[in-house]
Amino acid sequence: MKPVNLDSDLIVLAAQERELILPRFDEEVAWQIGQQLRSLAVERGFSVVIDVCYFGKSLFYSALPGTSPDKFEWVRRKKNVVARFHRSSYAIALELEQKQSSLLEKYALSDQDYAAYGGACPIIVHNAGVVGSATVSGLPQRADHELVVEVLCAKCGKDYAKLALPKR
Image (cartoon, rainbow, N blue to C red; front, side, top):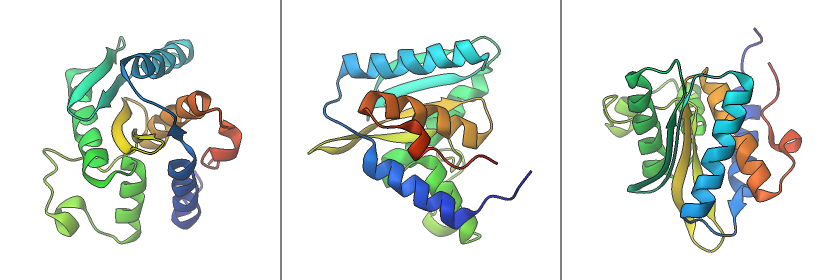
């Protein structure tokens, strides 16, 4: 496996966060995002847990066959990172890796409540900012992240091929 180029990945992650902005977000949009995530996961045979939330309110949740209760905790901890930093959990993970640090060292945040691993992306709304998150857990962290990005690209009318992280 080729090593991750942190600098180039962080540039792509920043572009994703700049480009993936929804015109609106409500229960119906959350349901559509969740359903699309679930459909792709089922089609690809992924055992994942999916959560789409407005901060403080889960609007879509699905645990596919083969997932464990532990994945719910991963989802909770990843989306806490998005709520705290208004960035994707993968971007925070790579920034910490680049600085050879951790959430506990840098921000005094417990691993019990926060997980800097890929899979949670901010839901950003035009003229409102970050209002929630879409989270997947069950695949390797880069794949969790990219599944969410693929669906957000479709929802925002963006070309996923142009915003995807480079293949490794």
